[in-house]
Image 1 (cartoon, rainbow, N blue to C red):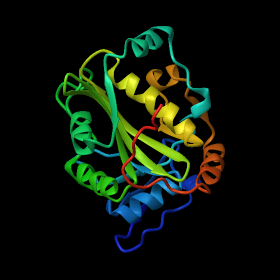
Image 2 (cartoon, rainbow, N blue to C red):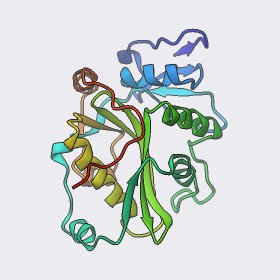
Image 3 (spheres, rainbow, N blue to C red):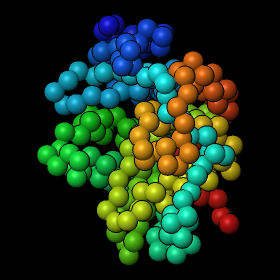
Image 4 (tube, rainbow, N blue to C red):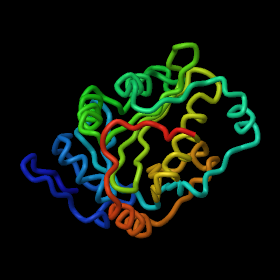
Length: 229
């Protein structure tokens, strides 16, 4: 397992990852290293009591925007129009909410450490990281955040405080990304949740090929807003 040098921003080839997808250890979360990692199909994921761990799993879970699946019940929720969905109005708050304990992890143990929070806030300030927020009566009740480079969106985490709040945020985001000609949404690892939206597992080599094509598109940096109807 390669231990990264803090002064060297390069990563080893992703095919050197372990069977679980672990590629490298250490380094730091400065913006240049994070952006290099995402461009090569690598992401950080670790707990407070661990060094920084860098991953590139095989297979990879990917949602192609034009293959989004919306269930009948969620379509009904969207038609009810009970939530207000916004972009990039409360990035750090979304990350903090994503880091809160969840029913399946009641005692915490989140991988969104303070170090991660500060690093991705810096990416947001540089125009690369973005949040989607679901508001109800002036209260943030759901959302998600991720990183956008070229025509690829790397989804990181989501949260919901009321029914379907994160789901409606995701659907609105995917439809906007499709309108902006984004080629893929990286979901990293499969879960029943993302698979219900039409995500699929593809071999890492195919993911890298799709990613390379997406990165030929220009970056959409800066604060995002939804296109007006």
